[in-house]
Image: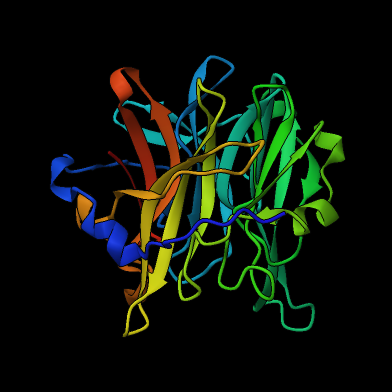
Amino acid sequence: MQQRQANIQTSSELLEQFASGSLPLGQRICFEGVGDRDVYNITAPFIDRGELIIAGRVEGRDTEFSQVVFFRQAGEAWVPHPDYLPIEMQDPFFTWIKGELILGGVRIILDPLHPENIISWVTQYYRGHDIASLHYFLKGPYHMKDLRLIELANGEIGVLTRPQGFTGGRGKIGFFKAVDLDEITVEKIANASLFVDQFIDQEWGGANEPHLLTNGLVGVLGHIASFAADGSRQYLAMTFAFNPDTLERTAMKVIARRSNFPEGATKRLDLTDVIFSGGLVRKAGGRAELYVGASDAEAYKI
């Protein structure tokens, strides 16, 4: 089944509706203890064994060979936690399902004949009661990022997908439900129903962090992205909500862009106008704190 919705809005149209000036300037997050490597595409902070933890993508400026490192606070900075080894992944994310910590990220696939070349990637998942007990349990289809899980109000597991190519073009969001984690397979992920009429074919998007709302809907923190005429990329933080039983959804809205944060380093010039939604800490009064990676080189919150 595919749920249709007319009047697709482009990223430019969404930006016209975004009151960018109403936001305070975001704050850079300081990471130490990783040498001259960059930390970006971070998670929001979460509690593990009574400590506040941020997981972040750590890599050199001239490479995409990354580690996910777990950081804890030390004064004004975040430093690697001495008890947790890095994981060879990119772009970490987490959720909690039936009392278990679920941690995921992107594992790159190298050309066996030319291991300096990345030929594909998969989203892989770990589960455990805490970081120390995490163990691998699931990987998605090849060439799929932005695969996310969420425990729904009725106890089922919601699965947000992001196929590309013949099914998803540059990248569209799909969804299906499973009774439990063991029921999720590569085949079901690949065959998930898509939210059509959400992105024009020239643009793409993905889910970064789903949240269960009090009304039973799933709120999605995600991104919408496009290419400019000069080939540079623009990534915007966006949100929408949907009914997991009917796939009826709200329109997307932009909640932040790169200019809402201080100027900083960039991995490449074509990534200057990029933020990657890491996670939301929802607070009282309808407010939230958004954590992002920026320009594939920095990390901020707003």
